[in-house]
Amino acid sequence: MKTFQPLKPKVILGVAAHPDDLEFSIAGSIAKWTSQGAKAYYLILTDGSKGTEDRNADPKVMTKVRRQEQRDAGKIIGLSDVFFEDFEDGTLENSLEVKKAISRIIRMVKPDTVMCMDPTFIYSSERGMINHTDHRAGAMATMDAVYPLARDHLSFPELLADEHLEPHKVSTLLMTNFENHNYGEDITDYVEIKLKALAAHASQIPDIEQRSNMLRDWMSNIGSKYGVRYAEAFVRLDMSL
Ligand SMILES: [Zn+2]
Image (cartoon, rainbow, N blue to C red; front, side):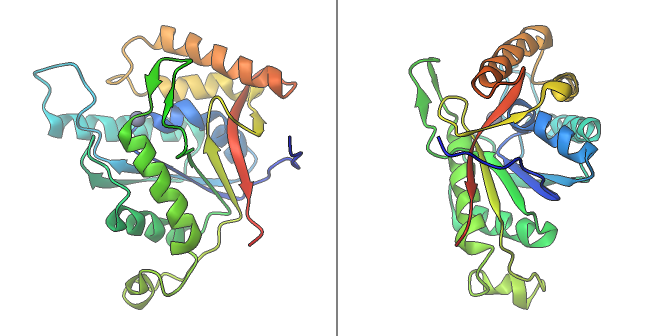
């Protein structure tokens, strides 16, 4: 396994399909880095209007509630801001429109580190699950935005011409993959903050106790692979080109 120096990001952008995705995957690392002075931002791509079993739920109300929950979670982990796009929950595609939206925010906040899901994680027979189509599409679009679209001035030239957004080169891409990873960020001192942020998503997570225990198990399994008590797992890509 490749050995890495510890990460000290200064500006971080986390990109995900839905409100709550990033609390499961990266909120411990974010809380740690913001407490060390980093600036961190989230970009949520969909309106979060579909993930419910309640047949009486109004999608518009759900979008509003979930965005507020995401802002509340962001306050707990020290986010500087949360950006929301309006792509429809459940139908996100790795389209030029989505890639442009992500490229815009990358050029605006100029992160050294971008975090998203690993787009190669499609399903897990071990855990008996399919990775949500929005997660896969959003992750692939994020990867494409990091390289080459946000970086090259001739990609989406209107971002520069009309919005004066200079191209930006991201140094590190951290992709969440709970099973195949090459980097664990020690979040031992930040697990409780992470779980508190997760609990802010009350409309999506009715049984927070059960979810918290599940997450503690995941984080502890990952931690044991990296010699710490709790860790979040990533495929880490430090880009030299
Ligand atoms: Zn999700």
